[in-house]
Image (cartoon, rainbow, N blue to C red; front, side):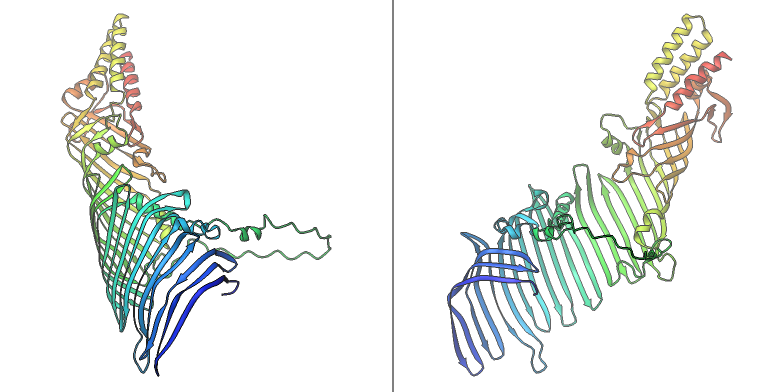
Length: 579
């Protein structure tokens, strides 16, 4: 290789060559071949400096087959072993219409903490510490069969000195002459007593430009944070001294040249940018076909989220990628989804997405309590959600702004606290106001304010029979609620509004909301509304008496703000009795 260098001093080694016949010979090292002060550089980049090398050798050529055996190949840095390797096997080159035949096995052991002592190599390694043992065993003859196992222990990434734990990976494959066969990949990651495992097992077929797979992905547990930590191994190495020397910031500034009077050059015409998004001409899954069944028992992310019972069927064809079925439980709540992403290059936007997302059972109270354990949830109910979504896009990035959907939510019996954030304060304030008005001789106002206080108590922790919500999700991520209805024997709350889109990295509970709501009551609640002079004198289509003034519910999903309701209640009560 150009600009590459191998240097060192051959210090020992005795090789014996024996002719065993007309077409056979043996070569073996009677004394190990050794070299001192070995240095290796490639493309002007130094990778190894001042290491010692030693190996044995025993090889035989007989009847057109080469057999070799190296029991120990070692690279040392002083008294420390950098890596050890052993390899053996035989190979028969293709001849007279026969295919290549080969058998090989071996092992490689390395210590990254010793490798990191190499100043030229340390910056290039993605690992500061850890050991790795690699074993392989394979054959090739009218097909291939082999197994590779990697056992890496106590790994620490260079980037941030991040401890990664230990990893065990095994790859076992058997392919016929047409490159079709079976593959089994098993991965186990352990860290601080936690264990992640995943198995990929199935049939594979490989042709030029095309790969097919039919199989399954299974696992008992995946710790997302532990697996994501391995991305630190992909961090680019810091710039080398050689590259820094060539950097413009460190290069000496050129001496100034005398001004010249040359004719100005015409301005370069900038290349016209294509209007609109760039259209993909092939799908992102081009060259892949097949089907994968997924069965993972538990997926954990941080301390907040646990996904269990992950079951799914995924398929890939030339013209579509589909999640035929996907079900899981998030923190005990069930979710189901199915979606198809198709591709038609003849369309202006070749990607088309359609799908459904259903929630058979979701505990709203538990979710809101987890968001803020110090506050009673604004809503307690178990809901079911049925939703549909769709969209088209020129490329996958464009989907972020083009997916729309509709969903319908229905809730069981529950408790509404969205109106009682100030219920206790309002009840006390209105009651004291009634007492003060009575002492001042304003009995009508006093009666009205006391009625409003009773009303505030009735609206605290409202027990309801059901909740219904119909909404659309726009391309901007905003949920437009076309209809909301909460109904109880004495109360009916209806309205519409919207919930703002979730910010990147944010939580759904923090999304701002804005609803225009209408309250109506029966029996005791209607009597309270009437006593507080809040009724309009009309009834809705279900026979509930309507409150005279609609109100706005603001705040966020987890912390709704009903101050508009209580402000209207106080002002309207006082104004009603002054008229």
